[in-house]
Amino acid sequence: MYVSVRDNNVDQALKALKKKMQREGLWREMKQRRSYEKPSEARARKKAEAISRARKLERKRRQIEGF
Image (cartoon, rainbow, N blue to C red):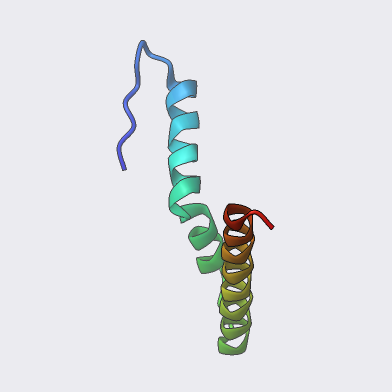
């Protein structure tokens, strides 16, 4: 990941870096890797994420169709 610093403005570059990391999902991954996740917890998390994605897609589909 690359962020350029313009006019010695480190704060702006740091803000851009954080935004890129957020978009890529690196913050979430780093948080998950801090501690061990039991297999049952991983399954529950993945199932919840799948349900969330499905609901989001359904909301978008309904919005497009005009419900």
